[in-house]
Picture 1: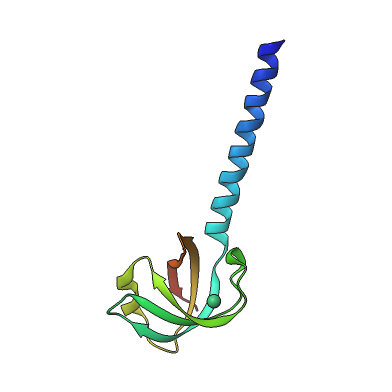
Picture 2: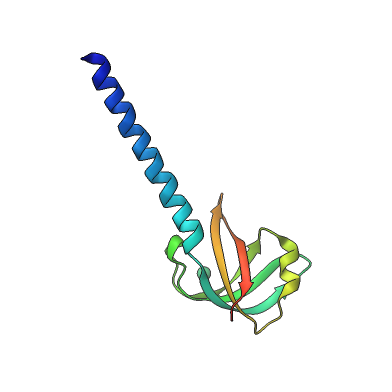
Length: 103
Ligand SMILES: [Cu+2]
């Protein structure tokens, strides 16, 4: 009886871990934010973007500077470009992990 209870608990733990993994990958894949590039800083790999609400970070729309995970990506854009991007928190810094021109 004791071993049955133990394995049931282990199964629940496994399900919870799976749910967390699914939630994490959903947030990464689904949360693209629309914005317009306002300033390009290729020297530091940063973009100033006027962005819509960032759902996964619970941030309302505003204009702000973002770090880019791939700093060379800054050179692909010029002010006025409409973009779609994903932002994640790395420590205390918000980092754009994915960005593309929107059609
Ligand atoms: Cu913001």
